[in-house]
Length: 217
Image 1 (cartoon, rainbow, N blue to C red):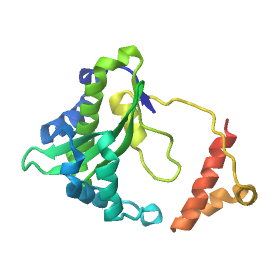
Image 2 (image 1 turned 180 degrees about the vertical axis):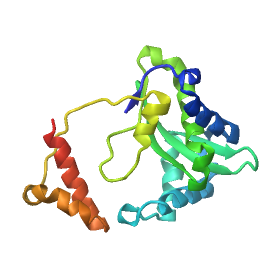
Image 3 (image 1 turned 90 degrees about the horizontal axis):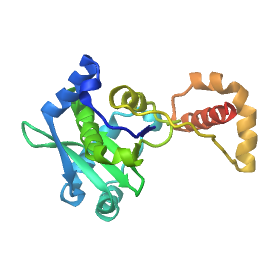
Image 4 (image 1 turned 30 degrees about the horizontal axis):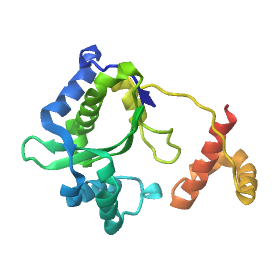
């Protein structure tokens, strides 16, 4: 998913324009120094992950998270979204900045704030910040197609912000034991999906889905 052209909010349909304006009305978004907000960032990450289904909910270790913020995020550009009423940090995005493109590394927000348009406000700010560079070939990338996490976020980026799919050929090289298991289980992938309730089975189903994508090329 990439964004490689100027964004003009006036080109959106009224309903979509309303959602973006709602986010901008409720939140102030700007670049932050993540080391000044490590505890707030951790709380946002925890609340966001707590809303994930148990079958693929990640385990969050506070010490590891804080070390990552203090040692790794200072090399990246971090945007914070602050509630305009009380100044509380409610969401953030981490961007990897390269010479020819920028990539969403993380985008997380407090789930209760999503209905107030927080994600739209964050994305809008990021896209506008890069508007001057698109004509020179610069683009924003949202990463690869997700095979495990159930999300409509990439569809949302296409609908509201003009992102588009960049198609590619998927190459997968399995370990011998995994390859045998994949080929044995692949014909039963639809049956297995019915029982997609725990983490282990969910990971198996995700691998089979990746194999399905590989075979479509």
